[in-house]
Image (cartoon, rainbow, N blue to C red; front, side):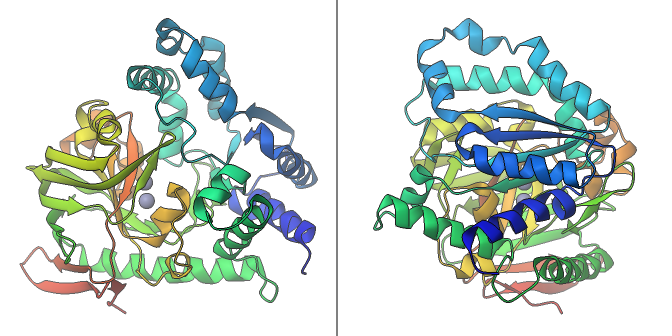
Length: 413
Ligand code: ZN
Ligand code: ZN
């Protein structure tokens, strides 16, 4: 297997049959950039071949969205169309699987009126709340994967010309999702799944009360974990018992922080690309779980927009561990795309927690989740803190210290 077309076909098949794991007779909603129409068609074909009842394709276009932000009035941003929300919410209810293809220009929305973006994301989050809830709780199968494009590729490889850059980004994507010339992709994924589930098992045994983070960048931080938290990573199971991978690539294991117990400062180790704007060199300080201070050398207003989304967005909802020497970080690339960068670095998320990361969480309502320290928010935004010298120490309930990460890497085997 060498040629590009073959790899692309393998990728499409991997996403459909292994990633989202479409079942015979199931509907699949495919959200795909119009620019990536060839890949979108390939995914559609693979889904039908795998037995999908219907593939519902929702083409998206970020350039059209940019025009929308620039020209449509505020009242349009504030009112998410009912029919649009209904299509997501209804398919989520009927048990469809969701595949989202991302392929963005990392700076497509740079300079867009902040109030408009805030209004649009608030309206969409509220209108599609049911869909997002089902997704966050892994009730439905979902998968997010990426395809290369010119604007993105040139951001990652500014020294190359467009054609070379697109090719190089494809290489990096294929490598990140374990599609190589000499290994079987599914086998590689099964192996990765084993590694991740082993790490989860080890941490679940320790059932730490809290984790302490320190590095030379200036991170000095303690985060409490909720009682009966569960470390998750790799594949998971939907409400109807279908195994799926939510992200391709993935290298992380993650769990639920107690959103009332976070103390100290986290320094971002990578820029964060959020909604088409980059946030550079930022740090966030917490007290009693809540953000008390934050600053960014660039993109401060975007960071502020995230944190002020709602009450929960100023607290943590995810703690994730990724060794500094993960295959993705070893590529030494900054992808400007969370799907990749989060899998190259230890990270946290501001906003909603994943209900599945606490015992019986999937069956709790938001009130019950809040009571145990889970976080409820319309936002969920990952930001990276991992460095080569990051040390993470786990403190058990009886006060024992256990090194979890040393020199940026997992050290608990
Ligand atoms: Zn994560
Ligand atoms: Zn996350």
